Image (cartoon, rainbow, N blue to C red; front, side, top):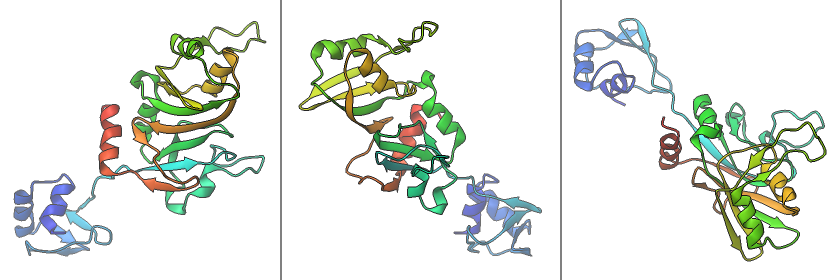
Length: 241
């Protein structure tokens, strides 16, 4: 990368102004002052300073999409010794945080990111981020039951008289052949399972297929991929970053 482009990307000066900084001897690469306007730098190896201050490229936010299999837990370390979602990720992603949880037996799309603010906004109810799930129940979901989910159901513990009312709802329910698709805009603990139980249904299988319109697609269980630039922009736009 040309030195003027590097300085510009670091937010220090425009490319034209960076040329002036180089020509006037304000720029050092690995401790050596350079005057060549065409000097090339390796942003991963070379240290560039401008008037003694280190020039650093802004950190690029990264996120990955992981297809969580059923039977692994969303945690870094499990005291029970069960397999965790991090067991599937290579060392370079071990510091990433997952965006929302999927319970032990649920499967499907799970996002990870190294950006704490992005994570916070993607999970905060005020941003109303849509999540889509395929739900298989022990008996077919009726249209009446689907409407109840849209209207809102109380998912508080019926056996605890001191528990306050806790209403959860789906923004949309689509009845498909053999399963239902639910769209939610919040992520309460075991929310869909509690919603289904509240209307007299039990879940056989639960799979998240999208989060903030990022689709799981045909990614195999236990596999992951980095989000594309367009997908990253979609996430950031959704949470006003």
